Image 1 (cartoon, rainbow, N blue to C red):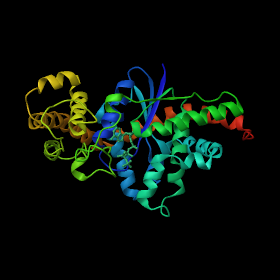
Image 2 (cartoon, rainbow, N blue to C red; image 1 turned 90 degrees about the horizontal axis):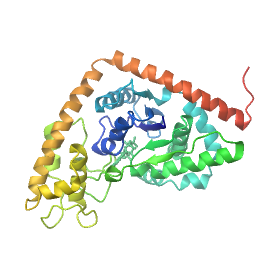
Image 3 (cartoon, helix red, strand yellow; image 1 turned 90 degrees about the vertical axis):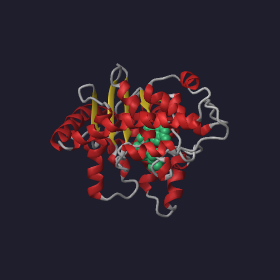
Image 4 (cartoon, rainbow, N blue to C red; image 1 turned 180 degrees about the vertical axis):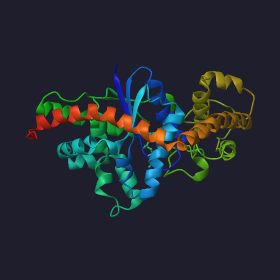
Length: 332
Ligand code: AQP
């Protein structure tokens, strides 16, 4: 079976709709056809200051949400990044292969460091994409299911895998991004020109899956739509309506064309009312399941411990090969 790997940060507490539709939903599907490794990336989280108690709680919360979304520990390997020290160990080697200019061109770093203020941004934030390279290469992943915002980091991963292989001999699988067109980028409900994101979106434009379902319904109903009245998928002319159609289509499995047909002659209000209902039907059981996992932290921790053990077996083997290729003297 081909292998996939991906990760999600435990920073915001609740996952948002963009995280779910852009990434987690694909993770759930891919566990059926792939040898799948998924992790909560706490090492990435500390690139921005975190409160220790909150980070710990949010790490469990992220794992609980992944299980609630449908990850099955019998079908995939679910673990916490810091439980597998090989990530940090391989990242060092990859840091030493990455050009300073190359890392400086990462647009996520530019955006996030601009938000923090250049002097406040940590060196960790700067090398975050290189840690991500190590995350992926350790598992010899063939594909990496992510949202569009991660494409540049996957390109960097490919470049560094090829560079390492070229310099030291074949070691790493060169991975591809797995990005579904329809959900590659979910947009802010109040400003459909920016991606839905925990840091950039307005509170009204961001759907947190763990919010009160009623509040979520309200946000959908007050989503910004476009001029005109026609319900048509047209990203350039109707970005707001198109975003709602993408969300609706993915959550219900109804094709966009079918939805356009359904709403011929009806106004934006009808679309939003229906989508609000769809959303409530989705988030209500999701919240309940998340709570069930949180109520049983022993089971949750034992799932994560087993996952870490499985992940380490793979990661340790790759790291040993990489260290050997680089010329590190084996420890006796
Ligand atoms: N709006 C989005 N549309 C599609 N996919 C998205 N992803 C994030 N936003 C969207 C995808 O979610 C996965 C997990 O991302 P992350 O761990 O980087 O989560 P995050 O940093 O919490 O996401 P944000 O909200 O985008 O954070 P900030 O505001 O810090 O930049 C990834 O696969 C990502 O592509």
